[in-house]
Each structure stands twice: as structure tokens, then as C-alpha cells.
Image 1: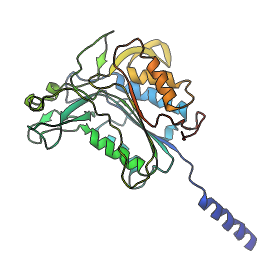
Image 2 (image 1 turned 180 degrees about the horizontal axis):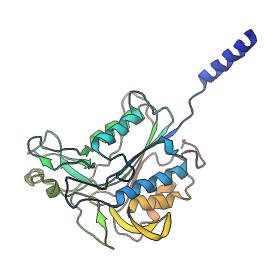
Image 3 (image 1 turned 120 degrees about the vertical axis):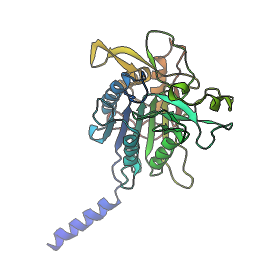
Image 4 (image 1 turned 90 degrees about the vertical axis):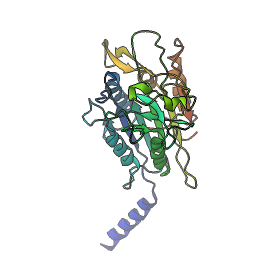
Length: 316
């Protein structure tokens, strides 16, 4: 018995020093229905979530470690559910650990709104993602109720990185509200103009407004060893994000509406091996015949990640 206990103690001590195996986690959000914004529904966003789930499963993300929010997935992409999904990745229980990869994907409408506390003054605008339950401009609160502001998303991603986990943000949504050009085949554009949200135009006139985009990068937390950040964005300043009728990867003889960027990502990821930069270059190749939108890629692109379904490591 003593010998058994001794071996058990040694095994326990050895396992105590072993780091926990890094895991992959994902929050996939696609908003297709906007009940409070007439005529602004997006068919493709729900299709995007299903396509992304299949794509990242092939990269090594386990379905059990994914949270899917879309009209087709069952759990609706409301503001509360999105924030709960983000909190679940880095909440008090602390799912995210040192070395984990956490993928956050957003598909849907974006817009610009006056920065909180600066109504009627000159100043910057906040870029927002619009969940399913987004309201129009509320004069009393001077806000677009239900919108997810860029600073809120950045803070959530910072909390994840503060635990030493790496974050990969993929955004297929427009951050400006002024892109009206519609080249190419019939398609939908992922932006909401300020008038559609009932935001008073004088708030833009007071600022000398021009469309800009501040990508929702996750800032470094001072004094904390943070994980890496990689951002894949569907468009740059002043550009919209398109969705189009495209061949269904599962049934090529049929066509469905997908976000253009999501679709190009999925096709590029099929045979991706190497760094994030290599994946970005594969995606850019798919845009060579398009004047815009122009994807943007930021962060630690030199990393060759190891998700389990592909080779490499999470080191540059």
C-alpha cells in the first residue's frame, strides 16, 4: 500500500508541474434579422456562421468549444447573448488559459454613431456592430440602444488576452456609414446609414463628419503579460462589406448568399498551411479582380499557429 501511495504521489507531483494543454475556443456571431430596422435584414449572415463553423472545424477547433449565435443556430445574436459569449471566454470562471487560441467572428451590419458624452460637440465617432435587437437612435439617452461599441469589444478581447490567450478576431461587417457605391452583381452591403438609425444629421455636421474606420483591435493591458492578437477585417476606411450569391461549398450546384469576405476566407483556408500572413495573401488573391472592398490584416501575422488540424506552432 505504501509503495502504491508513493508512486501515486510522484505521479501527482509530476502532473502538477505540467502546463495545461492549450485549447481552441470560438464565438461565431451572424445577425440576419433586425426586427427594429425595417428592410435591413441580411440573409447571408446566418449562412456565414454555418460556413465558418465548418471551416474552423477543419482547422482544429472542436465543435464542443464553439458558441454559435445566429437565427439558424438557435441561440439568437442579441446584444446580451454576444456579451455573455465574450464573458464566457474570459469570465470569472476563466475558460481562457495561457496559450489558448480564442477566435471571435462577427458577421452583420456595422455603423458609426456619436461617441458617448460628446453629442453636439466636435469629436470622433464610435464604430458599432449591430446585434439583432439594435434599436434606432433614442433622443433621451442620446444613443443607439443595443449597439455593441468598438470599445466594448476591445475591452472584452483585452480581458481574454490578459489571461495569456491569443485572440483571432475576424470581422465581416462595415464600420463606416457612408459607403453607397454598389459595383458588380446584385448584392447587399453591410452598413447602416445614420438616417436609418434616426441619428440627427446635425450631430455629423457639428463634427465635419467624414467616414472613417478604427478597426476593433484589442489594446495591450499595461503591466500584464498578454497573448497575441491577429485581426482579419473585411474592409478598410470608407468601404462597405458585401454579401453575394455564391456557390454553396457543401452543394456547389446550388447558390446561397454569403458574406464575400467570409466566403473568400473559407476557400483560402481549405489548403492553408503556414503563417497568418500566408492565409492573408491567399485571401487577397481572391480580390484581385475587385476595386473594393479591400480586406485589412493586422497583428502578429508572422505566427504559424497550431490549432490541431494543421501543422506548425504558435510561435513566430
